[in-house]
Length: 116
Image 1: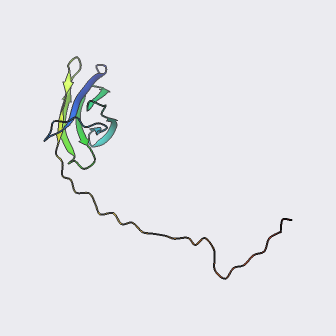
Image 2: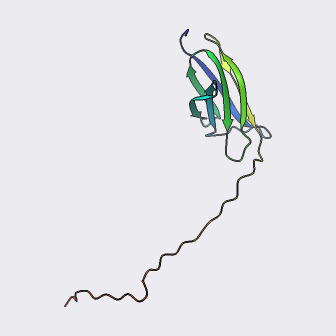
Image 3: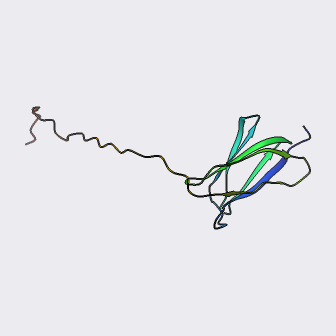
């Protein structure tokens, strides 16, 4: 390859424009996961990578995942890709099951030493 270059961008809420802190951004090449990063406090992400063609996926809890395919990353250029994520992904149903462990087992007695 021609040496490493960078791909950077910002992940924001599509409706409010607010930066999404700790959003996940993942990089794929030929459908194989390469690396993932988390956005900073300003919603920015940054990859150092070899020039080539990549697919980039941005995701954030309770937002719709966004995937951009065939991003050509060139050496010697500022490679930038921003994401505007939409809210509204439905979370799956969670079932909470209670399990109680009795503190004392019934019908079991024990005797121990006495302290005088």
